[in-house]
Length: 53
Image (cartoon, rainbow, N blue to C red; front, side):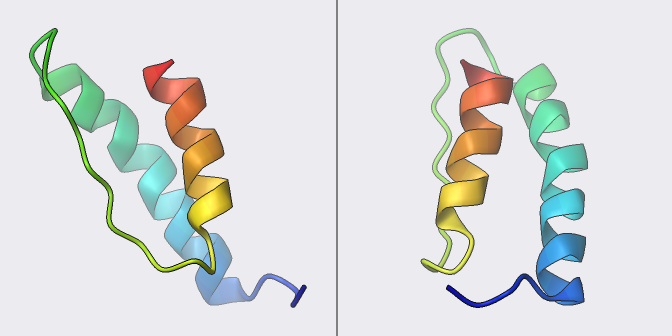
């Protein structure tokens, strides 16, 4: 597996700030779909599991 680049880290930081805000704005029974490539999908899934449960 390749090392994480600065760009990858910046993107994950960007999403870590925005995902909780998205949750705050969503209605109780809303759905969210996150489209991403396989490069960081596992990290994003972990973040979404923590934020959305």
